[in-house]
Image 1: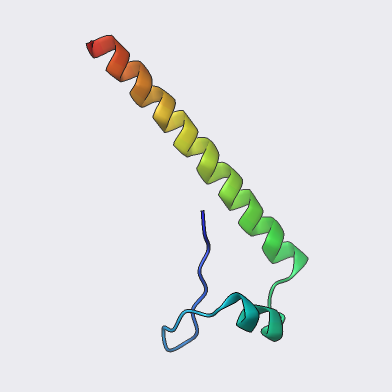
Image 2: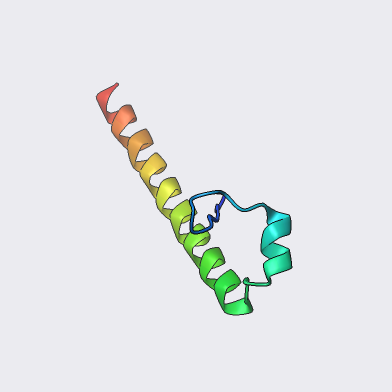
Length: 58
């Protein structure tokens, strides 16, 4: 999972620009890590459900 950041005009910011702006805080990094963890967990659960469903149809 990749998070992308945009400026007010809609242009994507590079990692270097984000670092120079110093907008990432420990709290922000924690939130992004939590979101990533939960999304990956949900995707794995959905994949296992699909696998179970596919096995029952075969």
